[in-house]
Amino acid sequence: MIWLLLLLSVFSGTAGDLLTAKGMSDHGEIHDFRPAAVLRVAAVLSRNFYMVSGILTQAVSFFSFVALLGVAELSFAVPATALGNVAKTLFAKLFLREEVGWRRWAGALLVTCGVCLVSL
Amino acid sequence: MGCIDTSVPVFSTKAAREQRKWKHHTFVALAVIANTLGNFLLSLGMRGMNFRPSASALDYLRIFANPWIDLGVALLIIWFGSQLSLLSWSDLSYVVPATAASYVLTAMLGILFLHEFVSALRWAGIFVISVGVMVVIGTSPRARLRAPEISS
Image (cartoon, rainbow over all chains, first blue to last red; front, side):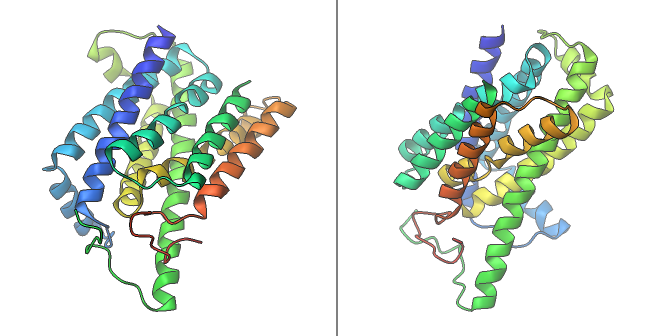
């Protein structure tokens, strides 16, 4: 059960991040953070296919992570789900056409290695 | 989408560049702190509930009766909003490692509040994560634009 929840959390989290990143990238930079402006942005984003599907996928990731916390220690759950870091970087390059230089690859790998060390 | 994103304004003055950099670092910090505290409170709440995974949606809704869970969810909503804002001007491959300082903060919370033992390996992990974050945080958040105005 732990591994099933872990896989579900990692895959849905990765897919959710990719979809919301695409939605936000299409929307463009947010400059105004006053409540009325934030509500207007939320209304626009609620009609964006990538954002809606991304948020639904993130919800699956959230509930599977909460369920994972119910059966596993936080010190296992957090680092294990960090494996998604490398997957997100890889798919960001493949699907979102991001330019991933050596520093970003190094950062993603160092973070993942570091998280594994912390969990030992 | 073409090579140049016209939704990103050109910041020519030093003050404007500084303001943009300040905004960027504020949102990175907000995402890191809200994510760390949110996960910590969720864990605290779930431990007290003796929750077991279930196929019933009602069992998942019942967890919101716990105030620690509610506070954790509120913080995770703040984290989600900060992350979305960051993604509106930064690449996903930048945001993911740049906000990884939350793993270091999670370890620190364990040390400070749960009095967890920190082995040499764990300290090494904290150091490696910090190096990874520093390597990425110095790059331009949106590589396609090669925007020098935000990078520190």
